[in-house]
Amino acid sequence: MPLRYLFIDMNSFFAACEQQDKPHLRNKPVAVIPTDAETTSCIAACYRAKAFGVRTGTPVWEARRLCPGIVFQVADHKRYVIMHNRVVAAVQRVLPIETIMSIDEMACRLTGDERQPPCATAIARQIKDAIYTLAGDQMHCSIGIGPNPLLAKIAADMQKPNGLTLLADTEIPEALLHLQLTDFPGVGPRMERRLKLYGIFTVAQFCRASAKTLSEIWGSQKLGERWYRLLRGEDVPDTPIRRQTVSHSHVLPPPLRTDDGAFGVLMRLVHKAAARLRKIGYWCGAMSVGASFLGNEYGDSVWWEEQARVPRCHDTPALVATAAHLWNRRPWKAGVSGTEHRVPFKVSTVLSDLVPAHSATPSLFDDDRRGEHISVALDTVNNQFGTNVLYLGAMFGMRDTAPTRIAFTQIPDFDRRVN
Image 1 (cartoon, rainbow, N blue to C red):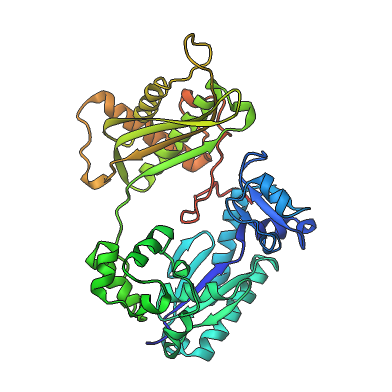
Image 2 (image 1 turned 135 degrees about the vertical axis):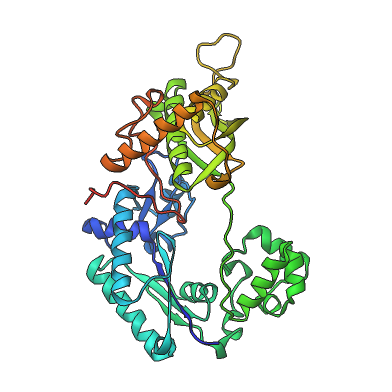
């Protein structure tokens, strides 16, 4: 069981980017938030803040209570993508990257003498030095080395921050036995409950489980056999996964918590979702829009959502029209008699029933094809001159609302002119 993979996990990446760009934030507890509001939650925290219990998802008000003196920074996602690109360039100076898992995680394959423990360890230290040189001295990473990407990632998680852990074949499974089941990527609270239903309460039991048992737990023979082989250090090729949905949501800033503001932001989200659908090469057959509304007296939120089937499409005009139609079905409307007034707080849209573009049949009608041509023009101009240079009138005045957020598994292509 040779050492085949080296896994890089950037430590508290968003917060580290802020501390790298802003020296006055160094050695202070820092949390990154999506918008400057007490009602939002932290999306990242540095280790100094984590020591006080601040985590991803911690509400701002609670973070203030847990960590007096904490500094909040509104996320600057363009800067994070730029820093991600610097980290990628630094790693590639030392070793080719095989897979970029997310904005702060990547895996490299080791070959030949690189698989020997002393050589692999030396390469890991060279990568750390290259990141410090190209990205900055605040950009720390934990590196794990193991026989497959899963075990290399687990190794990287064992020492944080700025760790370096090597899992040799002679150490498996013993080196894993102190972990919790949820320390394994892909085993969340729900899967942990399923494991326990089958009598698996410890990592030792997990590693001893048969392929048949794991197949029953995951409800799939392929997944069960895959986990069985990964836990034993085998290098198992990834199985392509078909995309199920494309979605965007946004918490409205206070000035836009009106019917008109919520509609404008929703149209911005639809533009983003449609462009993303075309970029990844899918068409959708259904669409939903949703919103949460705050009550007047107690501020309790109520969620509303409507869905509609659409002729298979991926063009912006068709999806904008469908979203506008669904939005008109909302039960709470300002200025409409006979309805309770509620304040919109968050809007979202989901495109579903996706099929790959090569499996979709284009419409034969000229009106539908006109929407296709408009969408191609939108993509061409925006790709060349910058995001949202060209957009439909329904989004007028909302170009800079709902700024692009980074899902950890997706790194957006921001305007390359940004420095």
